[in-house]
Amino acid sequence: MNWSLRRVSLLVLLVGGVGFALLAWLLVPWHPVPWPVGPPVDPQSVFSEQQIARAEAFAVRARWLSLSSLAVSLLVASVLGFSSLGRRLMARAPGPWPVAVALGALLVLLIGRLASLPLGLLLRDHVHDYRLSNQPLSAWFVDQSTSLLVQAVITSVGLVVLLGCARRWPRTWPAVAGGLLAALVMAGSYVYPVVVEPLFNHFSTLPDGPLRTSILKLAAREGVHVDDVLVADASRRTTTLNAYVSGFGDTRRVVLYDNLVNDEPQAETLSVVAHELGHAKHDDVLIGSLLGALGAVVALGALGLALGERRQLLTTRATAVPLLIALSAWANLLAAPLQNAISREIETRADVTALESTHDPAAFAAVQKQLAVRGLSDPTPPAVLQWWFGSHPPALRRIVIAQSCDQQVFPGVC
Image (tube, rainbow, N blue to C red; front, side, top):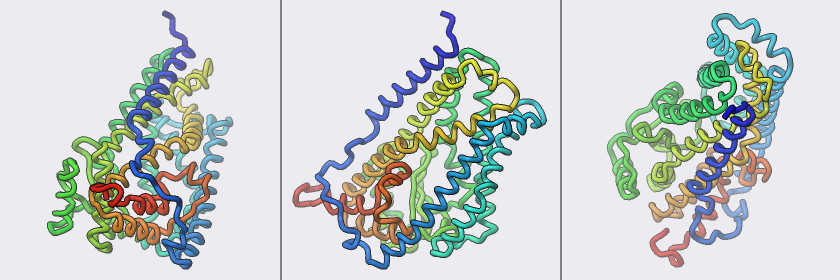
């Protein structure tokens, strides 16, 4: 059969879309709370008026600065990607085409960062004004530069693979590139904890003591293999509390912020750790990576259909780089509601796991309140922004889930 580019693209889009939908249906916990959840609680029953006012005052300005920065980034990407300006700029990129692609990607991303830098500095000052960060300006610039370089490397690798496939297989490149980019997504998620995370934080082993012993016992009880519990020196950058799980297989790690270890009671710290162990227990990082890989396949199928017979754009040195970066930026924005809906359900399942494993809903509710107060989280964020950008359930939702977990009605759960 003589496969045309359109037919291959349609098949790739269909396979990726069906695979994504099937995995999302099978692996995402769409109804993660196994007990009835009570009605939303009044914010004033959890937070003081002063705490609510302070969080809302911070959130309003932070929200507008973040959205404005996003708008500027999208505008710059669109101007460079959808006009002749970007193509003329890329025509001057030196070296063989892979080098030109890498330099072009770095230049486009740098222009976007520089355009949004004033807003980023205003947001940094705003965060400092509310004492959510103690990071010096010089260290902030180092982090921003490191983040840009990491983004440029990841983007360049993806673009070189895509454009190389388009040059080598002009009719079937969406299938070949889709498979290769899916593999790169999985590989990137696997190596991220040991390659990228050390660029931003120093990690040390949680010292022997009651907390470490309790964490290892909790992990054993939940059937989660943990070689080590790491502590990140996050307090040099932020005053907020956090913990996370990253990687999968033998790169999986459970990481606690040092200020969480040092500032919170053990019962509340264990509740946070139990949430992260819930992610490990259900292989949530692997699930997210698989869904991301299939999302890449969908994107390549859609790109092949969108370009159609204009595929020569992909084979002319680096001229397509601004266009592809712009399309990626808009695709990420449009896919955010689905990505975050999945994320919120996965986060809720980890909350349920924490409640079931610790049997301490009071500590869970207390630490959720503390996380919200320390991080100045808006207790009632605008519904549309929570739907579009909220990767976690709001604090009040998580607290009401804990309050609804009644041991008398559900023995052995809480």
